[in-house]
Length: 182
Image (cartoon, rainbow, N blue to C red):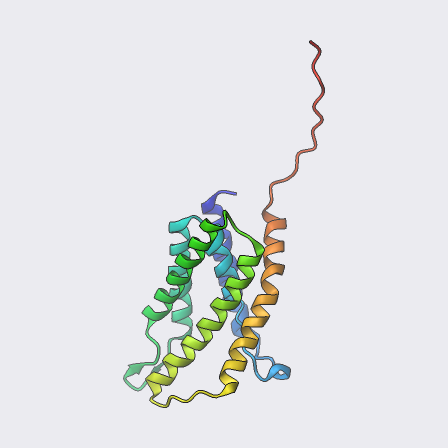
């Protein structure tokens, strides 16, 4: 598949996932864990696209996520938009380096990348919110909720990887080649 077609396909899936995420409530049976699905799509795009395509996808992901969670209290913004953009572009850069080192996209990299990206995203968002609000305290529940959400992303990432590989794989040609007479 051509990189531009893959980019557009993953961008549509990213937008659908982010809109679905807003509609899905937190899981009460897991202690109000908020599911973060878009990091699964982001990590696949960062691994599968060429270098500048993955950086641009990171920019788009950070911009959209930053605009979705942008909250203004009084006269000041809680989390600046630039943090999301830098965060996802940095992750795209790191995943692209790992992809180059291991010679391509592998489901193990995608799964680990999705889990680590989700955990660092949620913890970073918590730290930034705590600093901007002025009350910084860490409880075990913060880490538990972040790592539970990261674990769910880690488990769902191979499923997404397999579905995308199945849908986007080129059709197999069933042709029989006969020996030509000499």
